[in-house]
Amino acid sequence: MAAIVKEVLKGSIAEDLEISSGDEIISINDEKLEDFVQYRYLTMAEEIDLHIKRKNGEEEIIEIEKDFEDDLGIVFTSAVFDKIMPCLNKCIFCFVDQQPKGLRDTLYIKDDDYRLSYLQGTYVTLTNLKDKDYKRLEEQRLGPLYVSVHTTNPELRVRMMKNKNAGKILEQLKRLESLDIPVHTQIVLCPDYNDGGELKRTLKDLTNLKNVCSVAVVPVGITKFRKEKLKQVDKEKALETIKIADEMNEKLKKHIITLSDEFYLLANIDFPDKKYYGNYSQLSDGVGTSRLLLDDFKKRKLPKKIKTPKKVSLFTGESAFPTIKKIVDKLNKIENFEMELIGVKSKFWGNTITVTGLVTGQDLENSLSLRKLKTSEIYIPSIMLRDYTEDFLDGITVSEIEQRNNIKINIIKDCYSTKEFEDMVSG
Image (cartoon, rainbow, N blue to C red; front, side):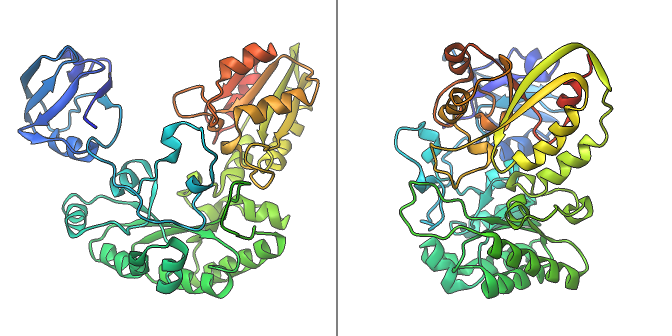
């Protein structure tokens, strides 16, 4: 890997220097770049010697003088320029290990890199950290980190993650606490493993640490390709988990423990109000997405009628269907506007996988084939697609589906806002 330029921001220093896509930044002030964190740290200097290799192979050193706060304006193809730190665990619940063969190569990469956790909010287990990593965390104040804990019981964590180093998690979190590195934590709940009394133990340990900002609990996801036998979280287990979290939050007098939306859907009870989710710090884990959307929709100004009749179809995952239906029902009260909402069933992963982000192209096409749509214009959320592409997880593209089915697919870009629903009926 290398520090390859993806694009250059308009009006930036990099544009003035005619740096372009495909160029490689070799070093800054004679320091070879390992990752974006180091790049950002080095470019804070007012005087910089930038060693660059142009995409035509020519190399040069550019001397730059700038103000302290000025950014060069370079976007890289990756946040890590050296080798990504790999995951050394073999977790019984790992989603990567329960995928079929034949998907794109990147879907089989199991990273466990604290730098990506800091930069992009991905979860790490801390099982591969060395003293030099802790030293860098301390020196550069790299926080918050997002940490997959699952359990603080040493023996149980070793068993669940199949790594002898996994039992040191509480010791590692305390070390981060001593360095004043804040962390957001995650627990993948696996019935008969880390639920019930074990969950209570883990929550107590985590909430006793001053640097733990939040604890997210999510249910284990099980595809039809799963080899390890695991139980799904059912209604009874969801109710039990909600009760445990609520009682502990009440004792703490703050909502530090939050559960993903699936628990409330399984329990068939209303989502908590926005106070429960605080600053929505665990949205990427599906914690509070439904409440955020429902509250956001209340702000929207909807007309009673639109001039030109309009019919559209909206596709979503089955788990999001009940929430989105509340929004769609209100949109359908607008005269001359009609939205058909369709929950996509997963044949690809199996019927236990219901989240929107795992809807594949073939599942979408299958849903299209099972019904006669009232319109040739459909909408899907961007979370179904690989970032910055039109590719579904199974490699099928939006364009291919459009051509084969003679439809127009519109992408809802912001999955945490209902602004685009408002735009649909603004004309």
